[in-house]
Image 1 (spheres, rainbow, N blue to C red):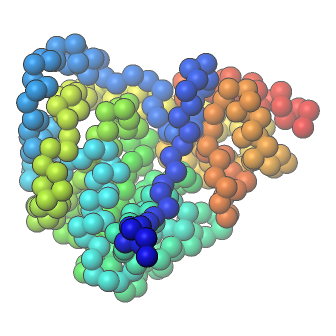
Image 2: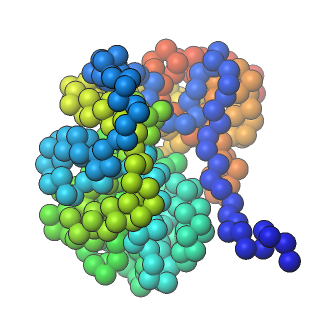
Image 3: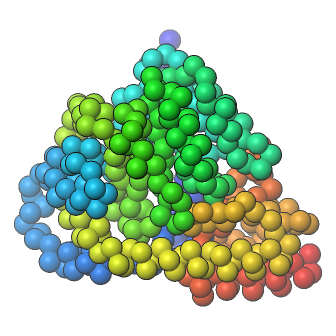
Length: 352
């Protein structure tokens, strides 16, 4: 018997490619094409380098307090982590221990089954319908928890909040996590439902709409008891999980609401314009409420387009998976970047 017979082996999540080249248009990982709020840069410039020799605040109080104020909840209802991936992983480990399978869609964020495998959580992928929509009835069943990305990735579709509420209400004995990484681009948050349901945890991130993917900031909002359980797990894992620059710059990002809304508005406007241009070129796609479009072409296979775009220095995301292997996930960039994409597609499709 080898020493690795006792190793916990998992197939890891595969993130989008992060090319080393700088001469590309990067539309493959749903990053925001605009810089963070001006206050973030000011905070960085004014940062006391001597403070780096000290541990950061384990409670992340400044960030927690500004998030609580912004979302009109008590600070005891807010949990922060190193990106929403960290928050979600901690939630999986904390809440999904009943031995019953947790439920999530078959086409969704592909980290969910990785965490389930890592923590030995039984799970069931619930098929989306032919139009990539969830059916609430599929989630009214005995389970150990539910995870729904809303809007969903990679499809971009938003389930009505009324359906999300029916799922939460029908599963009062399970924790229901609503992953809202893309909600700021035209979605409807489940946060108002926290006043009615103590089994709901809402998770969001600074990586998309707040232009801070490189700082790794995510958060969850739930009832005080639920957040207490999360903190207990976190402090049993690592008390100092968020670094000082992330805390300070994250706090600055939340306070500039006008810039945040302006940035989201620009991305939404570009997305709606590009939907029309792609449609005119023979693409079809679900009605995205995110900062990306999940598109398939009427003639040319997605893999071929993916390779052709990459050769041109335009990176989009291709998933070689059942049901979605003829789709491209195209992040919304600046207007200039998207114009380059459309110009290339027009030329390519004219001769292919």
